[in-house]
Length: 96
Image (cartoon, rainbow, N blue to C red):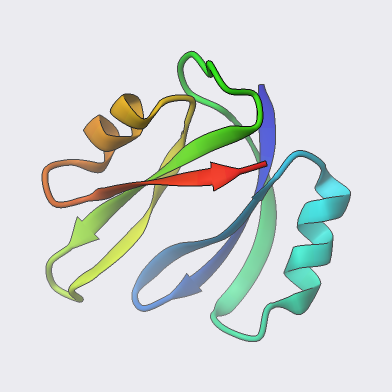
């Protein structure tokens, strides 16, 4: 499955501002952004099996230098997202 993510550059890395089923929905979200630099929409493939078609999981790795989390990717399961995020990263549920 493909989804459209809205990314913006802030706090020293890429931040996930939204995950959407359609490019039109993603562009609507993009138009509301008032933070970050160089926001854009990107179509990505959901990595791994996706048992629930109404949601995905974002993986965000931990950047110790800035004490922040940055976008890593979109996954079909919590376990896959958590593994990709690393030991201090986070996996977040994202409704579609």
